[in-house]
Amino acid sequence: MKPAVYSVLAVIFVLTFAACASTSPEAPPPEPPPAWAGNLEDVFPNAHYLARRGTGSTVTEAMTNAAQELASHFRWEIRDSLRAVAVSQGNNPTETAYIEDTVIERGVELFSIRNTRPWYNRGYQRYETVVYINRAEAWQVFEPGVRREESAFLDMFNAAEAEGDALRRFMMLRGAQSYYAANVAPMRSFSERLHPAEARGSFPVADAALSALPRLIDEARSQAVIFIDSRNDFENRITQLVERTLNNEGFNVSRNRAEADAIFAVDFDFNMMENRTSQGTTYSFAPAVHAVLNGRSGVILSYHSPSLSRTVTLTQDAGRRRSFTAFMTALENSFPIEFRNSLASFAEGR
Image 1 (cartoon, rainbow, N blue to C red):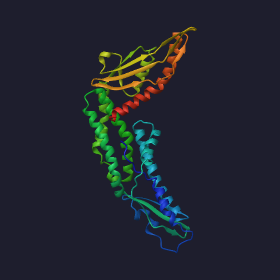
Image 2 (cartoon, rainbow, N blue to C red):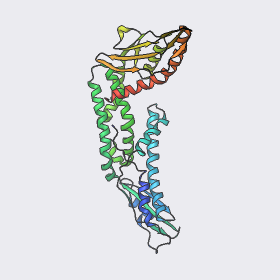
Image 3 (cartoon, one colour):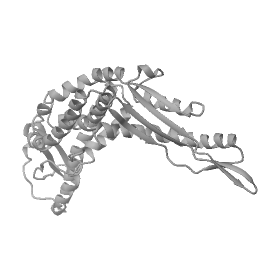
Image 4 (tube, rainbow, N blue to C red):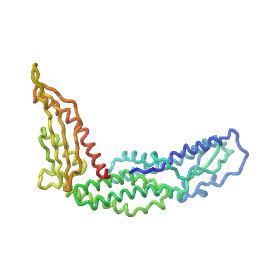
């Protein structure tokens, strides 16, 4: 669920295009300076407008520079805000770059961007203009999008709270938390820069759900104990990989089946074939894993290992070891990613 997000950077191109017909190779007749030339805040108070001044040797250059200043305001304000949030939550600040791009760079719909009539400053021999956004108008355009994301998050949160199966509840709560971080948080950060008075404090229900998530996740985790039932494992390496992946994703793994609320059945097979010819006997191997995570209410997710070329050897022992080495390399690369993707799909109801 990813509705359009509103990009200010595209304004640069709109204004540049509009200004192309307004370039003036010669200085215009003298005229008194506009009110904004003395003090921008007097004409465009920050509480009601986002305004930036631009100068240039032509009208086009002045308007483009003003639009770039406005775009830079959003970029740096949001980057700093999201970085501060990431640090406070113990996350990697560099991960905010992705979120920033989601908000600033991805959308196509624009606010009502206006500009003043260009003025030629004869003292500096430069054109000056102001590009501005009316905060109230922009909020009316942007608010429906952020409300849609908020509603999607709350739907996921409420569904998770109502889920009786502890494992499903844990996964759904984690999914709601991830959805908020990737979709709601950046849009709220953007909206608080766009219209602070309207945006701040206007999401009480989402804030209440967000503050309850850590406690609910911990409660569900303590109940959603998983036992790994690994059949025909080779040197216990597949079991170790599955357990490590589950731990990394926050699941509680037990080695006591009686304590478990869910079973992760992992079935491994070398798929050995014996090939007899007049020149002797060879053995070929194509290891594979099929894993199914079952909760109290049924199958949660399943995994099939990727296909690999068969390994052919003269002895069974050599074949097992050579084929398993290649197999584990592929499994270590694919299983954690596929498992994480399956969790996200499950949490979003796909």
